[in-house]
Length: 99
Image (cartoon, rainbow, N blue to C red; front, top):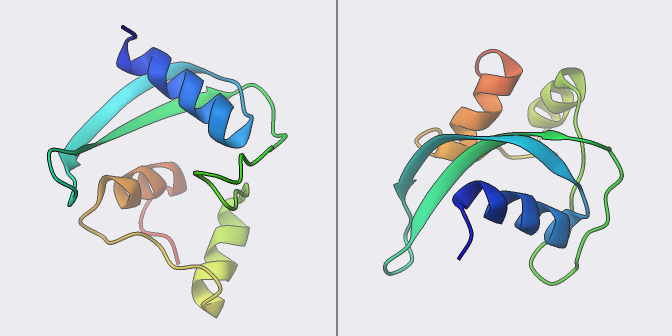
């Protein structure tokens, strides 16, 4: 009974404790689980405080472009597959391919 945008606001708040607004649909892609679809959205976070739920999300972190580059280059962070919407969201924010 909720819109996709409302679901993004609710899920982000539940899973990482961040309130978001200005939710915008970007794209969708098939997901490897039966009858599932991955939806990609952007949103504006109204704060940077994180409160991970520990059930669906075990870790969350904010990155600057410089921090992301360093972590990708030193191998401490792996990016999603290039064919994924998640990778395209990161690249869009980064301004090109990270690393």
